Image 1 (cartoon, one colour):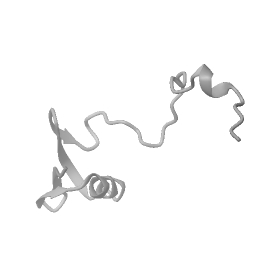
Image 2 (cartoon, helix red, strand yellow):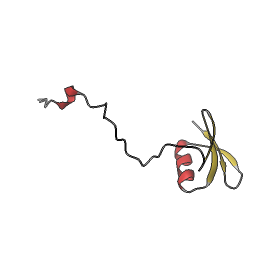
Image 3 (cartoon, helix red, strand yellow):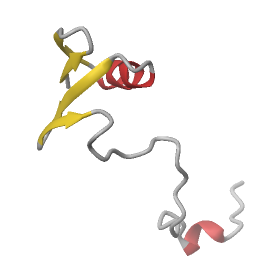
Image 4 (cartoon, rainbow, N blue to C red):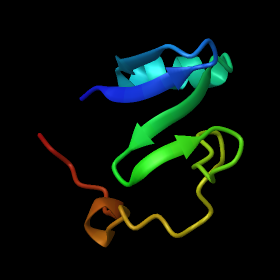
Length: 71
């Protein structure tokens, strides 16, 4: 899926998710279009990719806690 974005030099392009992340990290992008509209870098709230999740790990299930032996 390609994401529309506008660079600081005014060019508008469609990029992949990986390209979008790179352009954000290198601060080359002003806006990008998400499913609910345009996001303005530095103004609109975005998820922090580096923050750790502090909630309960719901993927842990009791069945995986047992020591099963496969032979």
